[in-house]
Image 1: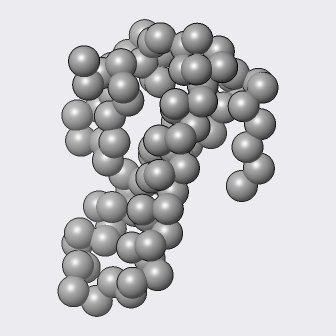
Image 2: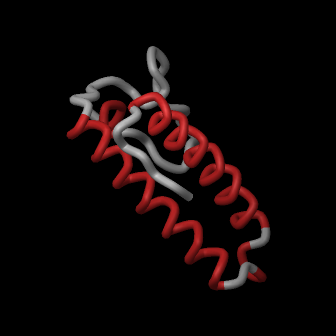
Length: 87
C-alpha cells in the first residue's frame, strides 16, 4: 500500500478503509480462531500498527483533531478506536 500523508483526505480515506478491513478480518478470525494461520494474524497486527502510525501522522502533520470518521464517532464494535474517541 502506498502512503502519501501530504494529502489529508486521501490519508483519511486510507485509514477508514483500513479500519473497516481490520474489523472485518478480526471478526472472521474470531469465528475460526483455532485454524487461523499465523501469517493471517501477523498481517492483521501489521496493518493495525500501520493504521495507528497513519493516524499519528495525520494528527501531527495536518493538525487533525477530529474523529477519523468526521462528525461521527468511531463505531463501538470497530477493531480500533481513534485517539479522539478514546478521550
